[in-house]
Image (cartoon, rainbow, N blue to C red; front, side, top):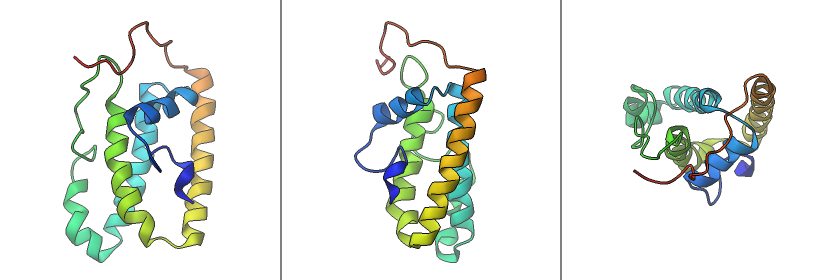
Length: 138
């Protein structure tokens, strides 16, 4: 069921960035997308007594993960790499604790949120890709 999310399955920062590109999300909207998942995961963790005790401290700082605040590519890679960290936690820990009905509800909520972002992107499109690839390192 989790195959509709950009961090599900065999993904990396390039595939997540491709997801952002396909949906025409500029960096501001990439952060909005990330923040939607961050808030969802934080609420899940804080409402589960075991997870709250073990993982709650990891949500005291925004964004989540080892790549937070690190944009080590020439342009706009932060929200792709950060979503991989958060997505790994979500798929590896949170999805396993969810019922099928909860997964269907999450998929539906995600679909509606993504549609809303796509509409916003029509008004505020991302800049065209430069000649240098997005993921060339410093």
